[in-house]
Every structure is written in structure tokens, then in C-alpha cells.
Image (cartoon, rainbow, N blue to C red; front, side):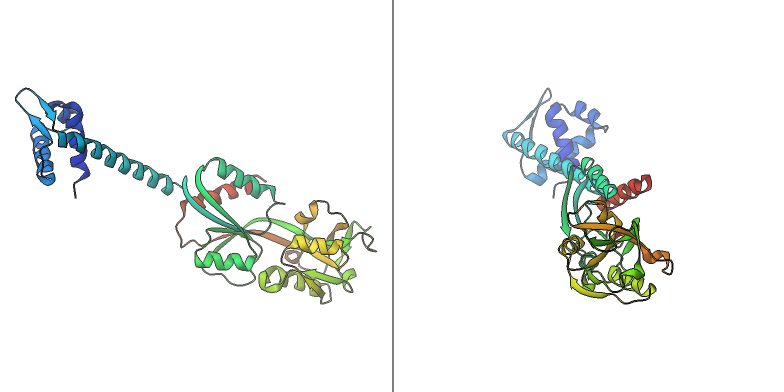
Length: 302
């Protein structure tokens, strides 16, 4: 293996065609430079320079080797620069999993700002349920996830709240309670409830059950759907009612009205739901860490 130092010394002599000037350029004495070039020629097994008392010129082998030496040095410099960019989180790859984040402007703004400052980062985005995200983060197939409360211990992951919002109830238009500005949960005890399947998001599902129990009843769940947006569509179709995060009810939906939930007997934490950001701290990812800081910054601003 030829040392990079020898390549740089050879290039300097080849470009200057003068050992003294090349030594000055390299900030070294001339005798060690001459020795280095002889060592390089011995390792290659060919003369690279024609030397006389008055001049230095490249041999044919030297001219050919100069092309290769420049290419190798340039490739190494590009590799070092690329490695530094990856270490700084400016280049690289990021796999992000998420529940529906469209209603959350702060998260979308953080992603937009991150992309604008990270042109060298390739981002793979995968929509997934909370439980699917937990598994991906634990297995290392995802770098960061945006989810609801997992509902189980996740010792390998760090989970941080991005924002907190109240729950509301989605009712079909024409429902007897639709005209009320806020609804006491107890008044919904005889309703047919729609919910996401528990295995896909046990934390959120269990919270809804506990909230209803705090109001004095166990909800009758008649239909399940993977996505909360699908539940809203089912509400519009008259299949039942659904408890959803208030942000999802901020957009109008034909055939559905959204009303704030009130229940004095319920703990306040049950009346709110969190959007969480999760990652595996044991896995090094400067790109992920930059996105985390961007989300934190914008969440603080909001």
C-alpha cells in the first residue's frame, strides 16, 4: 500500500518540476523529499522522474502515475468531506415512521425546515401505527417515529412529547347532542363507539376505555378501523361515534360534527392525548439528532 503522504509529495514535485520549490510548498526540507520520491519509485518499480543537474521532468510512467495519484487524492478528499457531512447530520439517510401528521403544522414546519437545510439527506417516510413504529425503532429499521402513547414499557426507546391536545367526540350530523357546544361523556354511555384495534395502539385504546370508565360506563365498540380518519368516515356514514384528538376535528368533514369532551369526574390526563416523538438512543444517527432538535425548537415556539 502506498501512503497518501507519498502521493501528495509526488504530486507536488510533478507540478513544480523542482525539488526545492516542491519542498518549500510542502513545508519540509529537500533531502527528505528526495528520499520519499526514491522510496515511491522503489515501491512502484519504475522511474517517475528524469533528473539532471539543471532540470526535473516526468517520465512516461510518471505522467501516467500523476493522473492516477490526483484521482486517488481527490477521491480520498471527497470521501473525507462526505464523512464529515454525515457526522454533522448534513448528509446521510433517515427513515421516519409516523401516524397521520397532516393536522400538525408544527411537525410539518419542522420537516420542511429540516429538508431545506439537508439537501444531502435521503428521507424514507413510512406511515405506520404506534405499535408498528415501536417494533421498527426497536429493531433498528426506523430512525425516528411520531406516535401516540405506546401503552407498554419501552426501555430501549426514548419518548418525548411534541404536543398535547384535548380529546373530542365525532358525531354524525343530526345526532341529538350535535347542537351542544361541549358534551359530558356520561351522556354517551348508550352510544355505539368506533375505535382503532387495540393491538395497533394499545396506549390510546386503553386511555379511551379508562376515560369512559371514569364516566361510569364501559363503551360498546361496534366497529374498528386502522386509521382515525377512517373512523371519521364511518361516523359520517352513521356507524357510530368516535373519540379522537381535537386536532383531527379541526378540519371540516361532510356529515360529521366535532364537539369538545367534558367530564368533571375524569382525571385531566385522560381528557388529553399526546403526540410523541420516539427514537432508539443506542443507535447513532447525527441526521436523526438534527431533526429532533428542529422539532423541539419549533414545538417550543408554538
